[in-house]
Image (cartoon, rainbow, N blue to C red; front, side):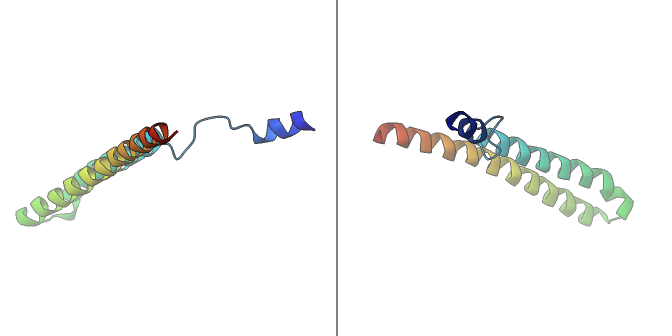
Length: 87
């Protein structure tokens, strides 16, 4: 019974909420959104000012996604450092 319990309770594969996975997902979302927006924007026929504002908003969103990914990594490393210092 103990072996059966160990088989079902042993984690395998990557933890999907680890900082490395979260960082990669946020970066991919930011890059994809920016590229899709840049490629789709000309088909909307915006004026020059609207186009510039649209590109700026897309760039800000892409940078925010990358920043949140980096913050996830920093928070996980700081938590690990605090756990080692306390233990």
